[in-house]
Length: 125
Image (cartoon, rainbow, N blue to C red):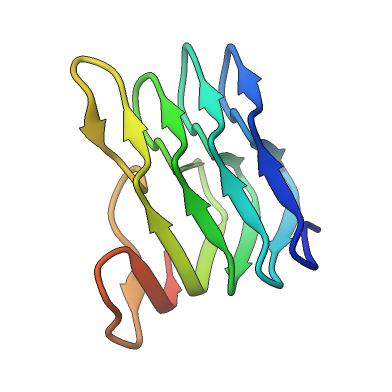
């Protein structure tokens, strides 16, 4: 659990999950927490790499992260769930083959409310 305004920032991983690498787990990020300015230099998920995990991100930010291939912000792999509630997910990039905006790898979440660009209300993937 990452909560209470916690900040995961400035981390680097050669492989997946520059900021957070969750495998076969349940993870909650909430309470105005931030996953920001992290890098996965040679793989996926600059901010978060989620392998077969159930993840809730609520009232928090995933911004300014970078990965080599996919999911500059979040890369959900395999099965599991990703729920975004009141979450800002923007300004995350991939660097290969060219610098490209990539907040969330794969298909976008299904949202129950409309929000401004980069902000997710009640979304599930």
